[in-house]
View 1 (cartoon, rainbow, N blue to C red):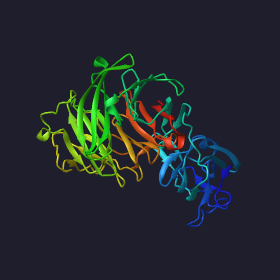
View 2: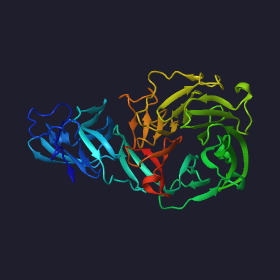
View 3: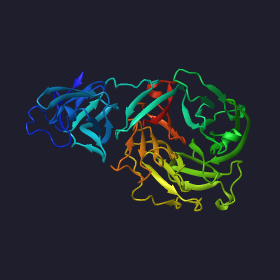
View 4: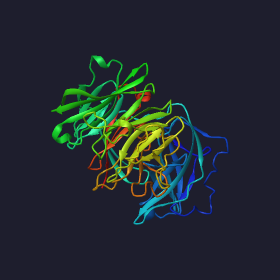
Length: 464
């Protein structure tokens, strides 16, 4: 079915300039307050005017959904007489509710993307059966919102509530599941392959949840793996770090190196090693609007330079959903979230404050700004000199069902908005990491729509 404005949607867009003066074939958008009722499985159609067949061959199309740009894949166009073409494309993935849709045409030149003005806005009301993604979507090539070609490889399709992922130099993905298991997934795996599953908890860890994983900086030599977990108690949650040694896909020599009480009730958190070799733990509760960043040495001791010989390096007024460092800089970037905000923050090492949030540095004016409704779930900064994404910040989003890429050279993309890499193709994204080759690994968080044991792990690569 092709959805058309009013009874038949015909949106007139021009190649770069405006449409023909004769707009008799274009309907007006629905009156204010009305909306087209759709299920999300329709196609959208429009007339592309004032363009030659040669120019038509280089045009692409994008939709602005509530102001966010998404490249339209799978479009088709056929001559309709004169210099006009009838075009249609599947609707982009949409959540239930009301949305505004506008279409543009664009092409890529030596100086960048050249885009037409937006079409008249179409109001959509998504209801009924919303198109669902396949939980084990096939490997695919598609375009990000800026037109860059990407290739996705689904490496696992049966994950159960994944919490974090780390990747070693051999391309093996270490996925922690909240139930207390670790899966080691080979780089050539597919969605149907079985992965090794290793238990993380002992009998004393009753009620605990696994939260995060980090490989030791010298993992290739030492084989040391660190996991972060949380166990609820009457006074909040005990977060603990367990160190393992991995050998041929098996874990051994388990030792708890960190045990620390956090007074925030049930917490979530991330574990990462910083450029100084120290171990950083970001933990908090989005409901309480509180969080902490803890700093330890790899053996669990508190560094002498921590203020007051406390592991609490910074106290926060929001939950830290992710942390990372830009290449060549010791400043810590965090992505912080609560019921009302999603924001980036920068913190300078050597300026800890255990009593308040005063150590938070003003974020530069050109720093990334997260779109409304992001509901960030993770942060990874690409450290791959050979990659076009080197220095870029990648934010995983539950609310927008996307990976948001912020240009590391200017801290934001030229348009002032992040590039949307996935545009809803895999549903809600639960976390992200990157490798020194520039590959991006992410996992989904769609238990409510896909059911248990259907989350996927995906490797995303830039098509050169």
